[in-house]
Amino acid sequence: MFGIVKRIKHEVRDKTIYMEIFGENKVTYRVLSGRMCIYGDEIITYGIEVIDHKNGEKELIADFSRNIEDAVAFAESLISQKSCPRQLYGKALDFLRVSI
Image (cartoon, rainbow, N blue to C red; front, side):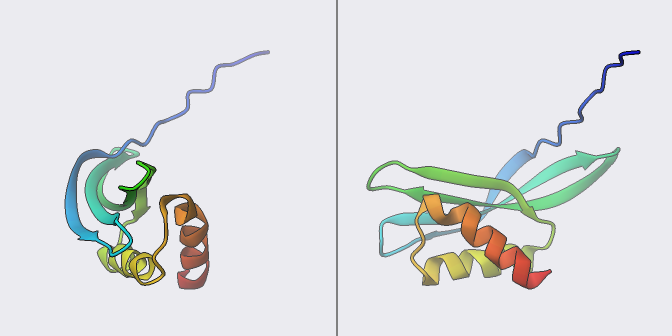
């Protein structure tokens, strides 16, 4: 017997910029605030966006953390390490591995 499995999409809505830093390496680091509905409950989530203005490269993790302190601490670590957009996911895994 076959059945259809409906996959629930958890999209971040109403994104606003919480913090934005323009680094000396011409890269913008942003902490974004947004709302997400999970199983009928609406939560606030914080994302990270990194934009390189030299080559136009851009990466985004829309729902990085539910904790603003973690999101800001991660953004600060990206700034201090002068990270580029393509390093965002690897750095996020390292940060979350240590913080969890």
